[in-house]
Image 1 (cartoon, rainbow, N blue to C red):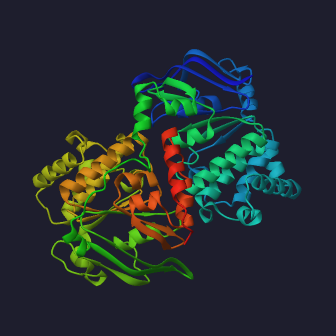
Image 2: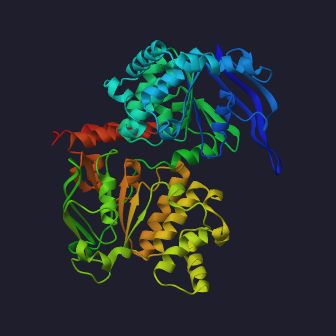
Image 3: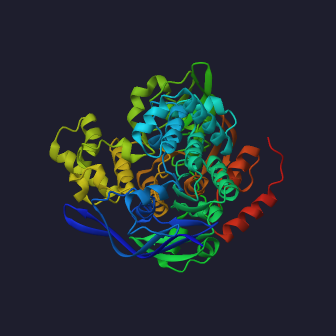
Length: 558
């Protein structure tokens, strides 16, 4: 039996510029017991499809233009509001960003109890307010909230209930959302990129939890993602969407092993594999003897908690050194210290760039411009009120370039370097795509004429094909501008694609360092092996390469 069936489905929106159709002849079916993947990049139409099924698109501006849509046997095109409201109770929704979905001002207990009591009130505000004032009903709601948290494998239930969202890890917050989704005993689970912002090990545990919930609660599911490896793990069948159309559908493994549509082939090819045969670059030995950066016994404490523990490493000129690890491992704290955003508790670092020899932190005024950072989320690191020209020109003004005409010309040159057309100068960040925003961020960093770029998760918020283009750009810039990179990431595929050497961090210290190929192909530490095992393989060739590498790794954990 089909829980969800869209046939030749077309949908659009009324806009100030007229009607705009965004879905065209979409065919999607979810049968009982199936987890179906909706795969595609931003703007492909997958989230709009899910939102229509959930009934959360604005009624006044949304119009179905063709086809049919049935949910649990009900015709969605003719369903009355009350009928749609009843259907919603049988659908669980897990959004992408738990921090945006959870209210930072209230504890988890308060938010979960509100949802549970609202469901019991049958959407009546008057009854909800009456139930919310009843101590007995609030106590019963808290007990049910605790049971739901236990369902999603949270052990310290009372601590989590009494915590605010900011006090929980990303993986824990996502589990809270899963628990909330299960509160109404749903039949259909709709998950919108629920693991995008998570580290690989947390991502794997979350996917395994979803699999367990689907099996135990006898759920069907619609899983929206641009991560083809996660789709391979989780989904029985997948639909690939492009420009509001389904361009290919098949069993997920068959689709990824032998994609038929050009777009699907490009998506699969764009994903960096850990076992790709990428020739390692030769770093100039003369430069290697004089590292561009040497970090020596770096320590950082926050109160009584030590988050960085006597970390030491060096980076040669022209090299890309990657620091990998989960959230909370200390890698971003190191990046912030190197860029002067936080002071270390103890330890130091020395630089040998642009004529400086063994200059340390006390000489930071001599080289502060030469170490620049490219942040993870370009959407939040760019001023939304400024034009692209203003954003890139600001560092030039700070460096003393007073002539407006020369600044504008230099901004144009920097846009050329990051392969952006000069026409974007007058645009604001909101009118740019994610990849274009990241290119603007890189251009802004280059305006300071740095020698070292610290790249803090520079591709984690991007679709796979956009990620591939940004990585190509970074390679070209490194060669042409003679840059040294320090890459902060949890994506081991990106490490394999761009890094010469890698250090693996766990709980504030390095557990393994070495050449990228050696660490990924023959990891010595148990934690490194866990990280590698948590990365989903995209196709059968990658799975076979992993198995062969695992067979070669026989040394004990250090």
